[in-house]
Image (tube, rainbow, N blue to C red):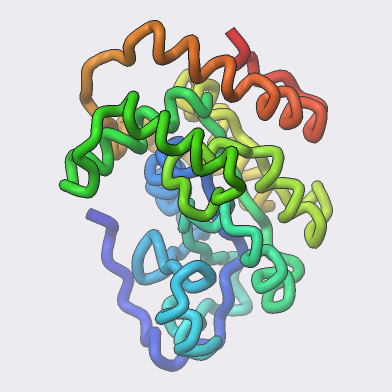
Length: 252
């Protein structure tokens, strides 16, 4: 459970200082739970607000969005933010965010897209949202993507990180992004959280990072399927490396 904060959320005009925008099933919950332990980080009423990607929420207007965040004392060094990992993949969202919050800091955590898509699949299986085999899902998604129907692809398209980030970088300079790698994050969470604390320009603080959140348990992927997906994602991973000047080591 997130710790309780007693603020008058209906009387605030505070907008988030940071957004964790993705990627889904890459560690955003752990990242958010860790950073809100910082004494100067006061979170939104819940982790995922889904303002920019949910028309029902967006149509409620900016005052509704502001009301999801605490009223901060301007005389203190405190910031607020939310984490909606679906923001990354929607091409219409960056412009909306920029128009409202041009100086917001954007945090992205990226996981090997092969592992991410398998985790995403089992997440939906667990919640009764999927009944096809993983191999059937992949085949169906490849057909949709070949037809250009990426908005209908629930799984594979989310791993086109370079494509998603390029859209965000049309509006925001690279200095406003902190891009973490999921595998490195869980290997040394304290180091990565300290990097995030520095990025948010906060004083150093001891953060408990021993617990992992939303960890899925499922059988390993078939090797043949993994090889197939490695080939599928290789050009997309290459584009990501070229975009960021960074090799994530996923092409194996």
